[in-house]
Structures are given as C-alpha cells and as structure tokens.
Length: 349
Image (cartoon, rainbow, N blue to C red):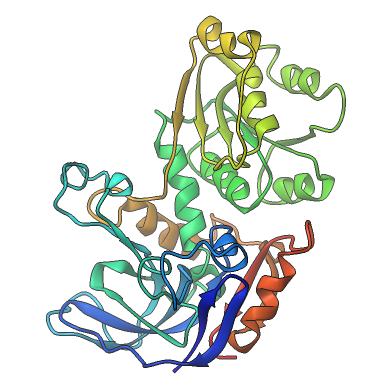
C-alpha cells in the first residue's frame, strides 16, 4: 500500500510499505480521510517523532475491509471513526476508567503506525461505527469533537447557566455547541477574528466578543449583568486567554483549560488572586476517554452528528489534499497563519 512515511526532520515520503493484516481482535480499515493535527506538525517539521520510519495520522475515518479472529461488533463495510488511544487496561488509572491518564499506553499515529496510509489496523474497540447520515469528513473530526465534549465533562456542568468559550478554533466551536446541546442559557465566544465570531453565531452561540477591542471585558460583564460567567472553557492554549479565564469567571465558577499551552506562563499576584477571591474551581482536560472504553464521548459524537444537532461547517476544512501530496501539506504549516482550519488527507488520492 501507499503511505506517508516520516524518515526524519522535514522528510516525509509518499512510498510503498507492507499492507497490514488484522490479528486476533483487530480490524483492517481502508482509510478515507485523516486530519492533520497540531501535534503532527512538530513530529514532521521539527523531528519530534518517537521513532523512524514512522506513519503518523490519528484523526481518521474509513471503511472496515477485513476483521480478525474474535471480532463481534464490527462487519466488513461498516463506516468507522478511528480511536487513537490504546490504553494498557491494567494500570490503576485504566482500572478507574481514566484511560487518558494511562502511563503505559500506545497511540495510533505516533507510537504505532497510523492513518496517513491507505490502510490501518486497529483493535476492535478503537473503531467507532457511524451511520450513513454522517459523512467521512465528519468521521475525521470525531477525535476533536470528543476532546471538546470531554472538556465539558471535566466540570459539574448543568444547563441554564452562562458559558464563555475562549478561542474560536475548531475545538472551541465544538465546546460551544456541546454547551448549547446540554442546555446553556448563554454561550459567548471570544476570539480576535470577526470571521470566527460570525461562525460561532451561525453554529448557535448567543454572542461573540472580539478581544482586540479595548473594552471587551466590559462588554462581557454587561452580558452577564456584572457577574461573569458560570463556566469558562479555555480552548486556545494561549497565554492571553488563559489569564482571561481568571478575569471572566464569576464567583463560584468552574473553569476548564482544554487548550494545550506552548509557552511558559506566569500570573501576577493580582491575576492569581481571582481564584481565591472568587472561589472558582479550576481543572484541566486531557484527550477524550471514559468507561466503558472509548467512552460516551465517542458514542454521543456519532449520535449528534447524525441528528444534526452537532453542526459541521465547511469552514472547518481548510483544504483536502491527496495522500500523494502529503509532503506539500506539511510545507504549508511553515508559513505562519496560512492554514486556517483542518487539512484533510485523502488516502484514496
């Protein structure tokens, strides 16, 4: 089969490798689409792979082509989304159902060969079936959509409250929609792009605030009658928005950091004291799994994509590119700000 094989820093090649064969409890997936994740970029462009040669790709959809011995829940022809985490199932964290915290895990598309290829083999439980009403493009977005839902589940979320979404990227748009699906009274998106704020409103946000505007904090407080927000979800991993979360939180709020920071972060005493004075709860969110594996996050994404309540916008996709041009796709990320949205790799191309 053909695959995009990473041989070293800035060296990803479209070449022939052996087609995998499913073993006991495994399925062979004919890959349709794979999204390039932010975590893939340094592995290719900065030489950060775990080993070489390697085949990355973990946000993928496809069709079951063959099943191994003992597989009972999937059949040839099923449309599936890939679940990349392969937990050990034996450690203390796994026994509690906290699979995201497993220290002995493997991961499809980084620690073992992934879906930047025409075929990939995964354990039976790592393929989530979806109905024909869900497109293969949506199937490639299951992973980011589940990450967003997991963030909501990291707090004691209840409907009828006010919610702030800091960052209007793909994850932010999915967190916003989950907040609405589960009954938020008001959901306001904060971003520096009016285009992203407009998208948020199309997808159901009740408000949008451009944080480049000097009086944005006053606008936010006006929307909540001076209280601040009951729930604050930081989704950008940006120093500015992480500090912003502390300012926008209401008394007794719940704050969740979903975004992954990339720079050192420090708070002034005044900034940090918000947590003391407001007595808000702060937590983080990592990946997207719960018991029974892979968790209701994945089941609910399949359901709400099917019903249309979880909306998918064409602007989520920046470009579709054939697998044969995968090196060109990673070159595009070398130009800051060029890629606005997800690049989907088409394994049939």
